[in-house]
Image (cartoon, rainbow, N blue to C red; front, side, top):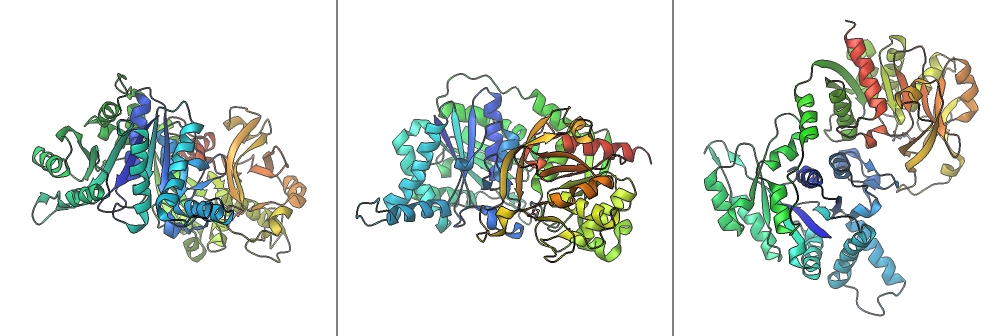
Length: 538
Ligand code: GLN
């Protein structure tokens, strides 16, 4: 196996994850098998317990691992199947070292950062290598910025690892920023020089430097960076701000032939230039769509760019599929409580209520669901959004006045959404939800089954504690709510829908974790199609 390590310098939010994912895309399009992973230097065991304010979206994998949102980019940009082995945090590293120490596995030695902690990091690298014998290139992104104290052990582990597997099998790529100083009218290379100097101090000489720039990277600056950073001039690669969509990133990096540089460095022999036609066509459809729809996303962390990342991406994929630009209107659910649904979302073509926790804004979301139901506006509820649709239906169609989820009202008279028995005693917050992919049965004749191409079984990813309460199933069904899918093992409700409505679907799982650029998720595709139909009515 060959290894690429992607580090970041100067500032965070450089698009390091996108750069890594784009390299994955390009290598895959050259016919290589890639696998991507991320090392995160923070002490949380996983990001599952972190607030979206701290961390953005928690991305869930098939095996139920709660991971960094960069893994979402990896799955959308490449086809490698990721597992909990592909996101390593300092929390996991130390947890494992301390457990080994308690079991006496260090045989009386003093347990030290070097070699014991670095060995732990390297052992993960070796394990991933053994577990994926068919992979040509393993791409590892290291979170944080070079120079951060908390990242030092990871950098040191990589230095040692490169020695162990042979430097010819490793390519170090450093992503840095070239700030543009307006007053001087100049692009500055000094921060890059200093950040590479820092990396070299730690024993790592980057092979390729990716420079994030607002503008183009001119020849003088390329030469300067090459000389000061001790890399060949051709290995200084520009990574410009893309104009329209993140899916342009691989195309942008391809301009300086980064994939070719990597293949040469790793001695991967002759591989054909990447066949990017399909990718390019997708990008063109995103940039120049024929139609346009407006979709309100009514959530709780709406001001944060990253809190609903996979949902926004899934809407882009579905939009491109229908040659449609999806204009997203981000709506604070609490604003609907204050101003009413008509004022806030009265003129959109579709309403999406995403996942969420805690009761802030839930009454606003219930009003949004009611408005969508009564006015036949396409509604798509995801996880909490499905629970919201159920509560709304119970209250306003079934007449169960104070129906609620026990998450928001512990003593509600009608707990239409509640905890399963096995969740009741759970006290630990980390990794204790219903997590990961599981099989569900789809019922023929329903809208959902139609959208999934009449499949009778589906696999979808979950991340929630509360469930549709089966005690209310009959009453809600009698009033017209259709249950179109249940879990294969326990018969838990997975999808609800309203048949007399153009599109009113709630899914207890997270379809947004399985949508890809040229393969939109069927529920998202159906939702955007319904919104498009509505937009063409007026
Ligand atoms: N808070 C709800 C639950 O735990 C929904 C979770 C979610 O939307 N991801 O069941």
